[in-house]
Length: 198
Image (tube, rainbow, N blue to C red; front, side, top):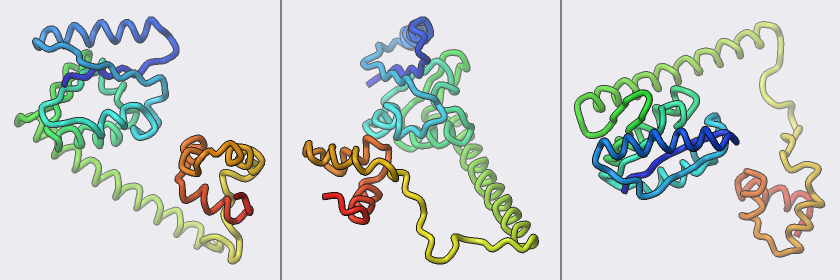
């Protein structure tokens, strides 16, 4: 299968421009786009919160994704690397129009995959180091670390009790409510138990 991935703003012209470029690229490779995946959300959002997440889950070996440019796949370098690494591990080719990348089962891709994993490791180490430094600074300033004893974390569902009750009266499942608020089913279940929502 060959997929055209478009991440667009609300501007219809932007979508059309990307589509034209993707179509031309597919044609130059002797391919036809079988399905377009169009996201109308920010590239900052994790893939699982976009249609891209569903696409990544159903990809099979020898599938091809053609996108306008790498920045359409994700905004941060680390996110793009994770997506490309996932595709490469499944034997999926990723092609971009403007950047002229073609990542697949070749030596260039394997070198890039190594670079991606190395960069990801460096980024993890840097985040860890920054966190340790910040905690050490707070401790040196006499600040107590961690949550105060007995204080429960504030739930993102606080103030939405009535809305949840209405949804439950309409027989909406806990899992569906969780999706509606962009939370896990466990978070919703625990909140409902603590607030006596049946």
